[in-house]
Length: 108
Image (cartoon, rainbow, N blue to C red; front, side, top):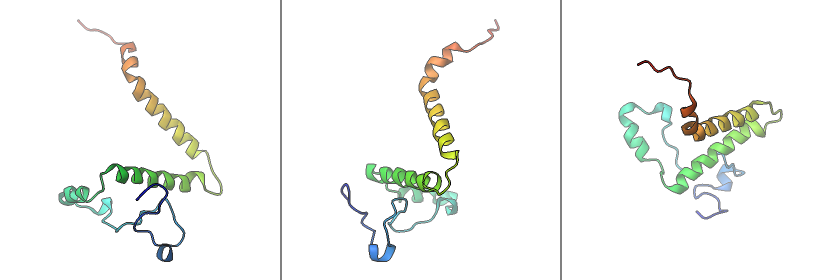
């Protein structure tokens, strides 16, 4: 699949309008239904290439968009989610600098 093309499993006569949040490949067992002994083979069936991982993130982003930002009545939830995500991200980036400024009691 090249940039700007539909996925290989998409058929407009069968699936209707294209939805970027949907996976058009062969359906597999949901993660919630996988037993612990089958987890290794289930992970082995995943597409772990750069395109597969990028497609997974893209589908997740579009699902989030459809649920929170493109709803008829948008609440404050998506803005708080982005804010908290940014706070966690920048805390992780600056953790190395902040850990030296802790107030510690030294017991000798």
